Amino acid sequence: MTATIPRVARPRGELSSEQYRRLAKAVKRQVAADAAWRAEVVAVLTEGASFAEVAKATGLSTNTLQRWKREARADDTATAHADGCLCAGPGCILDE
Image 1 (spheres, rainbow, N blue to C red):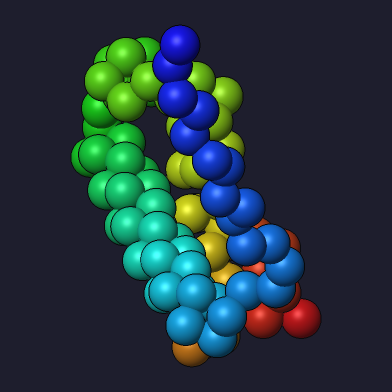
Image 2 (image 1 turned 180 degrees about the vertical axis):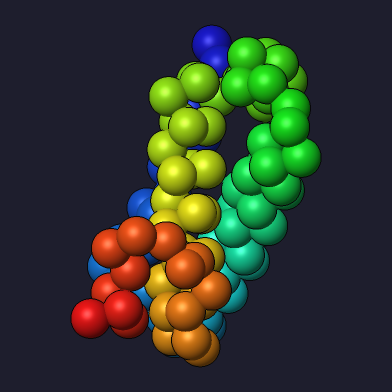
């Protein structure tokens, strides 16, 4: 007959302040790494790489890549308008 191993109850409940701090720090690192990766992918696209090739290399869909590039372009335009108009395009909000 085999001996049974007594079960030890795992503590349940709220996170300790140390556990919360560790998780918050890990999330910040992940967010920073995700932002850096996304910026690199957009940079490669901006340099002229095809959506299909970047999709194959990253495992992302071409739709996601197109959205990321479009959002990055919109962020750049918003930054430019915050510092002064650099777009000089028709319908520029600063021309009004």
